[in-house]
Image 1 (cartoon, rainbow, N blue to C red):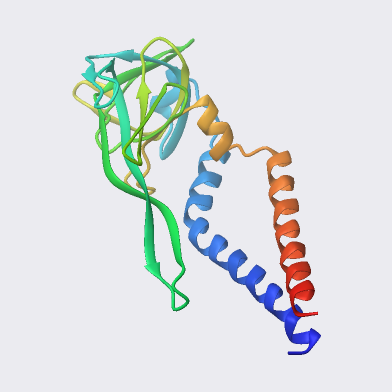
Image 2 (cartoon, helix red, strand yellow):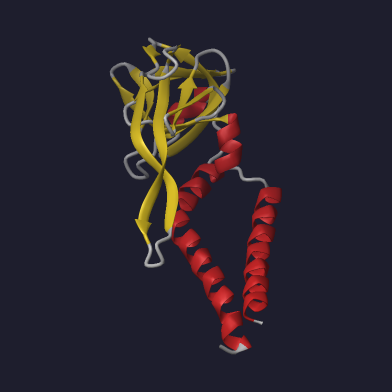
Length: 223
């Protein structure tokens, strides 16, 4: 095999990894861009806004639920049990490993979110909980357990959804068009939505480093 073909191998691997990343992250990336572009609305003005809305504030409980793992009273929780599993073996008898979710539970009661201008009820059916501040972790028999809690009157959160009016007044519900109703704590929002420029630059440097490493190893191995 000549040196030209050797150079093409790591280039092909790099391009393949890049394409896979783009394809699988495109949907989530588009949703993140929509959420990021939304202005933070004062809750007192929420009823005037049609379509998606983003509000920021603390949570007020209507009633609480006991979380699955920590057995703690909370407004809602997101629980996952994940195991490091071996996937199908390759022809050379090697195998790959990955995290597999073996159990997942997400429960949440309706609640109010409040800022300095007022409060509004959030109908929590089908809400997506994206939080990490109040996280409980444990490990047993090669299985890792994770649980994130929504706690009242403590941390600030972002809620994204649309405003609906019924006989009981105005509420935030799942948006019919964008299929979006989610709650983020500050940490998760900064990490997943408002991604710092330094993080993007770091990822770019990492990809370049991976490519150069592949190139060096292939050239070194076959020379």
